[in-house]
Length: 273
Image (cartoon, rainbow, N blue to C red; front, side, top):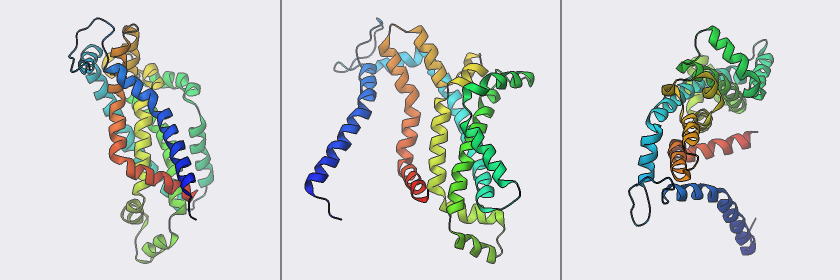
């Protein structure tokens, strides 16, 4: 179907308008982070731009410690939840066993349950296990949340994957383990990368669980540290904007490096659905 020049122009106009609408708040924060400090601190200035605001925010806000904690939490959550999601998704999507539908409904229930409804009883449960104010109190609840979505995501992929490939592997004598890791997982790379990016973003941006579960400053994640930084510098929007850019940078970098696989996985999931 041929698209007329007028339709092309209209499409570009709509896309540019949405791009401006999405990027304007981000560019506003970046511009504020590079602006003249409004708290009286003297920072490095280059042609009217103040990149020294980032160094000042890093020094005052202790973002190095917070970023290390967030990176450690995110790596553990992503690694464990993606592996468990692949295993559970394969079991639910490719293997027929009694109670599989019930297990799927339990995963769906985990997806629909909001954090606010379970965080208080979860806190008391972890406190009885002497896990509060530890790294595990932040990691374990987020693994459970991520596995609930990841299992459903991977089940959708494996359920719609080529049955001919699986049957051919079975005829060649491959068991479930070899079929999964040597045949299906390489084919599912876009879906797995998409799940990895989504899980990393959700884990990195999680605020409520670290806020409730930990009190030690060394266990604060980057979003939680930014909130405390905001409480200290309510009059200094420049440094606050610089801190927000520092916290958001790892997610942006990860998405830039994996955007092709991420978009491919999203489109593949949409087509399969």
